[in-house]
Every structure is written in C-alpha cells, then in structure tokens.
Image (tube, rainbow, N blue to C red; front, side, top):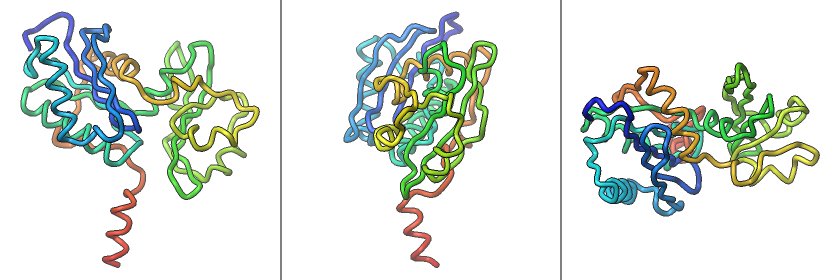
Length: 231
C-alpha cells in the first residue's frame, strides 16, 4: 500500500458451491479464478490467492483491501473465506471489507426492476430470505434477513417481486409464474462484491479483523449435533 489513487483489491467469494477469487484495481476486475466445491479449503484458497498475486506481479502487501462475502451460505466456505481474509488484513494492514452475500446477489439483478427477494436453502423445508427494494438507483434491504418455512414465505410474498439466489436450485421448480433472475446471476460473483466493496472503501469504511464473523442465523448441523450431545 503506497497511497495509490486507484486501490488494489482482493475479492474472496466462498459462500456458495462454486467460489471465486479475484483481483481488481478500482472498478476494473483484472482476473478471476473459479474454485469448485472441493477447493474452498484453507489449504487450497491460500495457494490460489498467491498464484493470482504472483501472476500480476503483486505481493500481499500491495493490496489496499480484501473484500469477502460474509453470508449467509455454506458454513465451511464462509469460515474459510473470512478467516483467510482476516489473517491477510491483520498481517498486511490492508482494509477488511465484509459484504452481505444477499446484497451482492441483489446487485446482480436487472436494473429495471424495483423489488426482489433473495433466497437460499436453509434445510428442513425452510429458506433464508431477504427482500430488497430499489431506492435512488441502489438496492436497499426492505426486510431483515430471516429463516422462514418455504411455503409460508411463498404464500406471503409480494407477487410483483422477482426472485434470485442459490435457493432456486432446489426451490425454482416450485415457483411457477414467478419471475426469476437469469440462471447465471443467481449465485454471487466477484463483480458484484467488488462493486459493493469499492463503495465501502471509498467511504473510508473497514471491518475489524478481530470481530468479523460469518453471517449466520442458526448453528451449523455439526454444532447442533454437538449441542444435542451435551444436553
């Protein structure tokens, strides 16, 4: 980091089945590496980041910020991505910028719609869901993130709202007559994380590496089983 007018950013998206690692200068996305589900572990993510930096001729200390998706999403993927981002930010002094995954998904929707529901599967016939409305040209959360029974959400939702999110892999066939975002925009991408992260960076914002945590509304299945054993 040397006071550049155009910041250099690392983007980590590990919330879904297929992750992405990317480098950017300002709003320009320079390179993107796709990580499949089997390569989101800590032992694989760090080498992928190192390879991208080396190919660009950068070092980790050249980064001005690391932008990372904070969920909701895969428990394992989120933990790996956020821990990696926290360590890098602490070690290099670059800014840590956490981005709500659902906000990034809303940002990928067409610009000519005004209301969208974002969802992903929460198991046991439930979904994580959050609604967004476009205000002054930007998406704003219209409801808080919640876990709801799928049938309950479907019955109560605004019929004019579009729908997006990884949850459509499972629930899309149950949404006859509902307008859905194109399939290639239903999973979070580095491009939308960069857009939201750069807005936060330019506003002088940053997250504390010591306090940053994934966005969960309930324990993982493994944590629930552990709690049940202790009960």
